[in-house]
Length: 97
Image 1: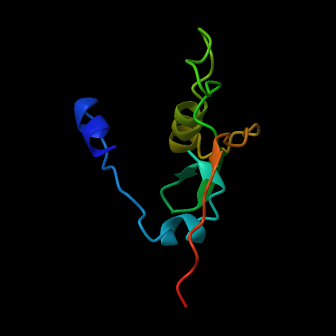
Image 2: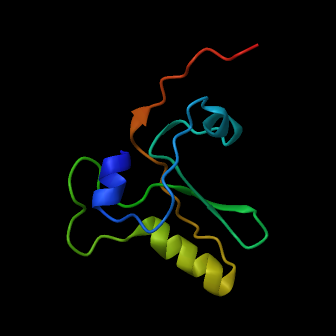
Image 3: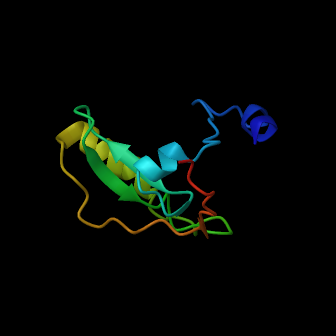
């Protein structure tokens, strides 16, 4: 993924949650699982990126995450329709005691 992120010039940091502590803290259930927060760090969006799954979304499909975050930033309103993320389940490692 490091090479993929570099090759595609991700405009954000790409991090690896080796211990899965972040995924557990956010109660993530699959990959990818998207969380969007407002300026007060309140969870405002939890859902999928868009209609695509293993293929490109259809032409004209909503860009759900982007549209939700723009609405939250502009108006503070939470999108009423938040479709859950769909992806591979997280393969949890045994927790360290």
